[in-house]
Length: 136
Image (cartoon, rainbow, N blue to C red; front, side, top):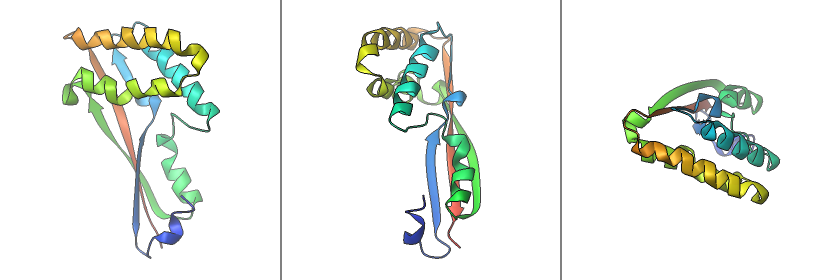
């Protein structure tokens, strides 16, 4: 964010978007979903990533020198986009974050999660965090 600030004209706005995995939920959860998410978060953390970054946007924008930082949350659910799309968008890509030695178990968990696509009463939701601020 500090590197972006000088490129904005005075009055220019920045918008950033990401999730916060504490706002990611699925029902019914056999335990595979949370285990898979925890594996991915740990793998990403080893590479300096943060699966809970959304809640930190306002602080990061403030620390970088932006003015009037705000954070809002837009919810997206499986009712909005379908369970298959929801799993693909929020979970499927996380396999890339999982260490090689855990991939076999993670693949089993992902297959368990994907079974929910066939469960008519299944539901999932996530908060998409949007951070906005201005260069003074």
